[in-house]
Figure 1 (cartoon, rainbow over the protein chains, first blue to last red):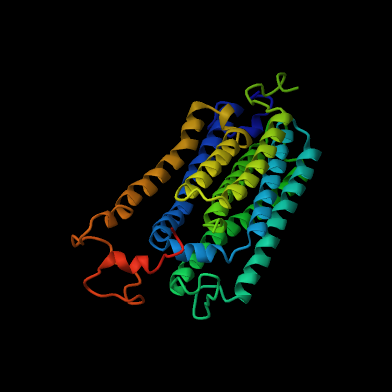
Figure 2 (cartoon, rainbow over the protein chains, first blue to last red):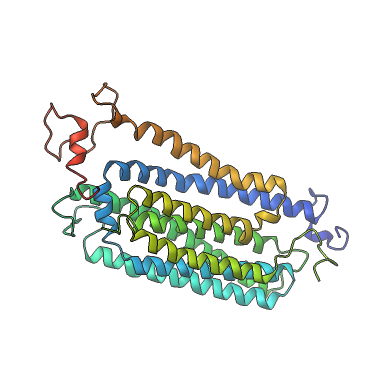
Length: 221
Length: 136
């Protein structure tokens, strides 16, 4: 195999399999740094939610459960289409790879569109931390608005960093779509498609945690 | 098709992807549903347990870790182990400081000490209770 596709295997690797293994391990090393990158924000969230549970509940009730839930579903759709793109890359069916990437990009863009709508709603209601922050919600008499502001700081930091990952992912995805169109991949070489899949699924996992942590605090009251 | 070429790459059958996809969507609905039920302090535990299960499905099937080498499997777990150390070790300190009745001197001071009414006799823990009446 390494002789068949000699140009596809870099000279430091014995064969395509070893090269693929190295790429996968390297991608996971990167994802570990990503876990700890988001981990710092999750730690800040953990400490302050423990300290100001009422204010975090008040802030969470200002978020739109339906829109957040819709976005969770949209990201699951996009992860599924990306998994299918990798699946057809393994089988060497480049047309299907391309069209499932189109689907992934469409769902990713839909997610960002909903996010823009939500951010606009927060701006209109003065829920952006800073000198214009205001809180007059249902718990206004019970909580310190400064601590609700802290919730919204974490909301914007966590969802904002997540959205940046989505935007970067969409950019890389478009680049990969051009590569697919140019015939850069084959059944013997599709590592970039598979590695991008790992990144995209990781970003989905982050949102799977962010949704209950930010949108669903104390909803039963 | 797969066995003749690149036999070392496990091809996951499409029905498995569809099953994982459907399970993730159902569990998203379950997450919202249980959030509106009152389990007291267990609400957050249930929500995170469902999220962790969903994340495991994504890692094992969509990210192919179930079919990957032992080395890749180890790498996929490591990040979460370190995250657990980060959150667990910090929480064990932060969450238990208030369990001590009197301020031994090293307890964390309320960050909003200036914003809430604060008399010296009450100390740190009363400043928080004024903050969180919505919790039961």
